[in-house]
Image (tube, rainbow, N blue to C red; front, side, top):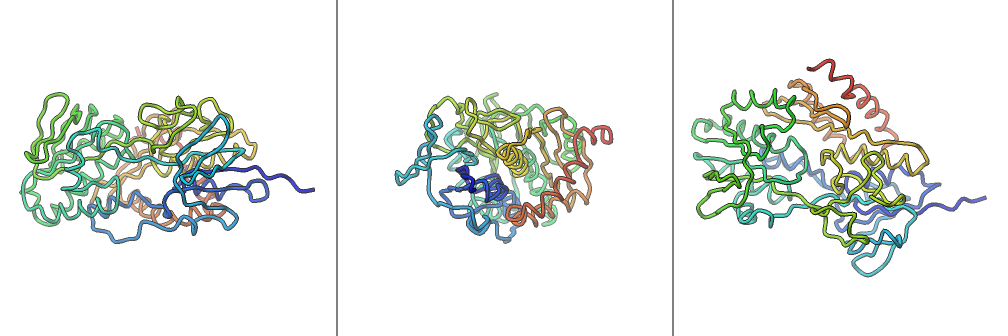
Length: 397
């Protein structure tokens, strides 16, 4: 006797969406992935394009990363009706579902900071596109003296360590070029300390001082004058620069929802923090950067949430722990990890070469992790168990 398969529509073929699709058994589910773009991007590598000039490919076709039995539709989505359980594509076609998973990621919103669009055209950034990351690389190579400002704009953004990663790699770039004494580097953040979580800041702030990197806290970017090359804060400070790399505010993708109140003011989807169920709906989930959950917007977060939702859809009582596991490159072949969960604050994890090598290893296995979860899940489950914050907090105080 054949079993009727449950229809799962996944909006987004990035890290979380693709990982989830490949985890759902073909004999139980009919899975369709929808994405406007044909490619899955490994966004963390924009950092190394921007500050190392890396030419490593960072995208692959989504179709090539999905199991053969998973359907893929390349299309934008203009409407999600959670009440009537359908998704409307840009051509008007409607997809009905038994379960919906929103994995649309986040996008940048330059309009939140007047002048930011022009500054990005001039100097680039490493949180949006390959083109903008290459602009950063060009900016660094053209700079011989003056002030480089790296500014974290207020709002959500991908990868908590990334603003400081860029700062540390910029410092390394100019020191290796013999220009460090001629280039002033200033990091500006709206947080009360360079890294927002105090245990990690106890490692990072002394390192900034050791490398001669200036930093400004409580600096809430308000607007930028690209012609005068001055960034103004809401607190009234003026930061003059010769080049500025701004981490832009991120918001949710512009899709219409019914009901509208599942979205917060920045278009992120509100959900239960343990199950990832969309607020008010048992048959809809959100994972990764698209959610309004109080967790880091990273690939690892999407990875872990995809696993939780896959188990829930198969009838298990799975729960999201809020685990964060962000690799943190501090330059010169050194690194650490930002590790925490809902019950444990960020661990004061040591800076060393081994942790940097772990980051490189994660990057090298990214595509295989998506396509072959049956091989990689046991390895990563062992890793995440060995590095549980509850265990590490007693080792690293």
